[in-house]
Image 1: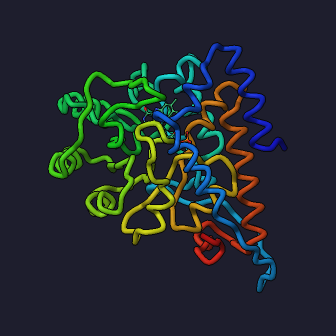
Image 2: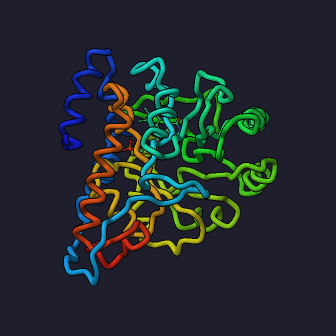
Length: 313
Ligand SMILES: Cc1cc2nc3c(=O)[nH]c(=O)nc-3n(C[C@H](O)[C@H](O)[C@H](O)COP(=O)(O)O)c2cc1C
């Protein structure tokens, strides 16, 4: 099996052939310190080995997400924009290949497809559009589709900024807590807040959202942002809690789970994967194999058994 780095190197060649600007894909806001920090914090954490178990076992990476059984606690992060340039059929592929592996696909905003066309379940993350009525219209569409959950990436309220270039989405702004609570009450679908990067916001949102994703948007919205792992280590988890930003390897996923995350989202890894035939399935397969191997070396029979005491941070 290829390593993740070998997989990425191959994908980069294919992406360049397609004319994708790797600086825009890999870069972060302004000086790019957030992107660097995401990697640095992950590499700062070390994993111990527990090799002597009380009984024979085979580790399983299976877990659940919003009541669904998933094959591993890793799912494609919501993506939009650039992904269209990698593969015209990107959203359909994200849905199909995720389910081929047995995980729930997440989709970004805007997507150039009617969400009602997807034949399998997905999570749809909508932008914090200033035009709140438009958000309500999108939620209505989602309710008539196979959406498993919807949500908002609250951290893109000032747009995405790569280097000095701001990508705005036709008007976005911050939410008040009341606005978010009202939004949650308009839908029967589970609601997810993505892009939380402080303990304060976590506790404000966790008591009425079905899940919260700690994230700094892969370093794409603010320079010198905290790594979401630095927030995760400080919170008392009170709802389903996911994390993303900088996660690439099985070891990275293990570290997040050890700190209490229920699942990890991968963004750029999926963009690379779109340049490779069946790439999303393949990259998730590598992550699953890597995670399972570390679980064996730490005597973690199941995802739930991956505990804080297995890491040094
Ligand atoms: C090309 C690209 C497009 C993205 N589009 C969205 C989006 O539409 N909605 C969203 O919530 N996040 C979006 N993100 C952020 C990801 O969901 C995720 O938070 C981030 O990529 C995680 O960091 P990683 O790329 O290091 O894994 C995008 C990221 C990239 C690289």
